[in-house]
Image (cartoon, rainbow, N blue to C red; front, side):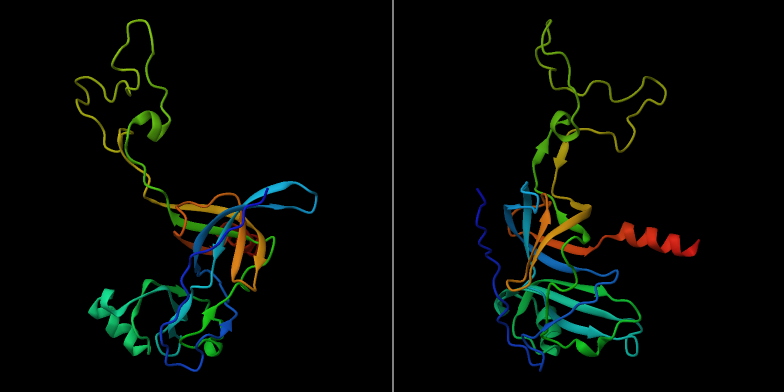
Length: 253
């Protein structure tokens, strides 16, 4: 049975002194990207009747807070912010930056995404909300997020090591790693050896993920399978880089 997902993404109600406030614009993604909020997972039926697990990503939080053009800054880029924050919880440098953009308060996340040199920047204005038109059903995207933190873990869980024997007199080394170095030569343990330590809480990129459905009305997209990170986590979305590289290499031949 399909699960109904209710997103908890707050709406951007900051005051933006620009004529483009609240307007939805088409985003030429290029090699840049866009932020989304992981709303949760659910299930959808495909055209052939099979059940597919999908992740819901909410894109409604993206607001343009700065527009850079090739004529002025030397390159085309959009500064995208999401998840509004109260002024009392925003640092003074951030308050000053957003004040120049006519924004009262601040945002939790701000990132600059470069656009192709051929992009037309006239259609972008401070306060515009970036919509879902940069992808369509069947597109491949790369998803970048911070994985769930698992705390301090041993080698068996962290690196899927086999461990030692569980019987025949073995008592305290069942989940031990075994040897981690040689004898007198080199007389040390090399760096980057797989050993117990912090697991998770690192940036993870999942490539070539298919967009199953685009809900333009609600500003959401559904992607195939799971996405790194926890619910309400931030996910960076970009067009899949490998197909673009393959197409460029094919064009050179």
